[in-house]
Image (tube, rainbow, N blue to C red; front, side):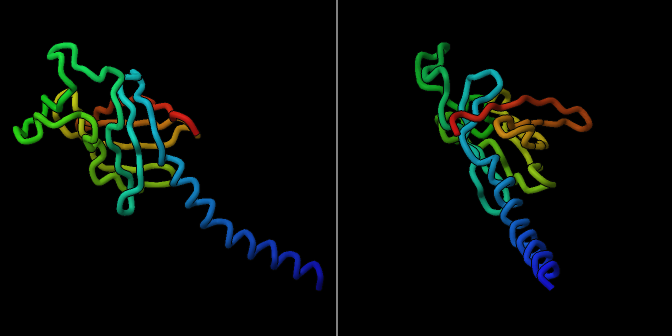
Length: 147
C-alpha cells in the first residue's frame, strides 16, 4: 500500500511539474539578445501566444553617413522610413512551432523587407534566428545579454 501511494504521489508530481517545465522552457527566449555582429541589442518578449522582438539599442547610436540617429531608411513605407531604429518591431506573428521553436516573419532593416522566419533556442544563451526566401534560408545566432 505504501509503495502504491509513493508511485501515485510521484505520478501526480510529474503531471503537475510537466506544464510548469514547458512554460519555463518557452519563456527562456524572453530577454535581451545581441545580434551576431554585435551591432544591435534586441528585446524579445511574449506577445499574444508567441514572441515579439524590438530593437532595444544600437552599437552606433549615430549613423556615420548622416551624423544623425539611425532611422529605418530602407523601409519602403515613407511613413516608417524616418522612424528611429530604436523600437522597430522585428518579429511579426512569431508563433510556437514546437518546443523552444517559433515561426513567423522577420523584418530585415538592412533591406526593408520581411521574410519567412524561424527562431529557436540553440542553448540557454543562444537564439538561432533564420530568415528564408523560398527554400533558401540564412541565419545567425544571437547571444543573451545578462541573465
